Length: 78
Image (cartoon, rainbow, N blue to C red; front, side, top):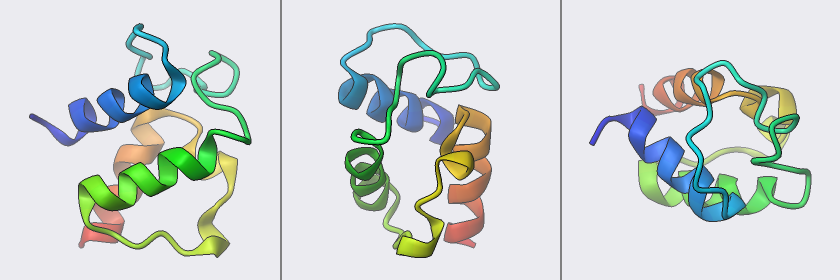
């Protein structure tokens, strides 16, 4: 399973939305995430990708799209 697929599965589970967001679709405007779901999705990313996401990075803009999340997590794993 690719990183993008893993990200999408986490987003679908947290949002309880079975649809697959486009890579550059706003997850907040599309209803996949809101400010209350963000901490839950961050925790899931940390577990799934074995990374630590610092509190300073808990900015919705960093996690606005699947593509941004994919780039961010790749950088954290490097």
